[in-house]
Amino acid sequence: MRDSLVDENVCQKCRGGSVGGNQAELAKRVPGPIAAVGNALSRMLPQYSDFRHPVRRFSQFFGAAALEPEQRMLRWTGFFPDSLDELLREDRFSATCSEALMESYRVAWERPDTDSSLARTLALNFETYLPEDLLLKADRCSMAHGLELRSPFLDTSVMEFAAGLPDRMRIRGVRQRGLKWILRSAFSDLLPEPIARRPKMGFAIPLPLWFRTSWKERFEDLVLSDGVRLGAWLNVGPIRRIWAEHQRGHDHGHKLWALLTLETWLRSR
Image (cartoon, rainbow, N blue to C red; front, side):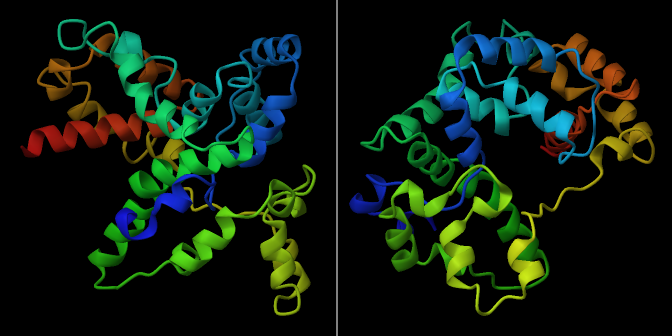
């Protein structure tokens, strides 16, 4: 799919569809001292499972605002950006493993010939988050039900058009309605006003709740058992700490999901 969409022209420009495009632009403008204070404050705030909660959004933003751009994006989209070094077993992974894992992000971030944080963010998402997460999940779910899925906005002509747009045509201001501005304007005469004004909606599932209720026993039996396969690659101590923190109210739902999925896959081999 990626080969059919990408040509030399598109590779040198930004792409459509992003995670953190507007956040990246905002983070670029935040002075270093303010970012540092915001980061320190975010660590003291309570945890909220609702990804739309203002406190959670504040913590997520300032938890990464002071980092380098590619590290910032990985923090916003990754599962273990803070605990990877302690999680990986030293006898299995070298000390430079974290830097090696960052390489794909760094290359994608630096490829566009532009100073625009938004353009670089879109380029990064096009090469990582889109094919390795969103499209992958959509493809698997549709095939599981015998459906042939197409993504109209990934049409080559549409992508090339979007790649040539200046930043001012993509985002106007920091308010929700300023996101996807040209798309909202293009269909303003076709969509009812409540739909056109509606905030972006995700498809989140209640992982935090499930790992405290219906999936609690399953996780403990598979991941916290003596015969855990993950133990050959990861240190079990940090996993147990993450699990305990989650049971006390912290939101580690996506981390636990990644660990459970990996353990299940290792047992199937």
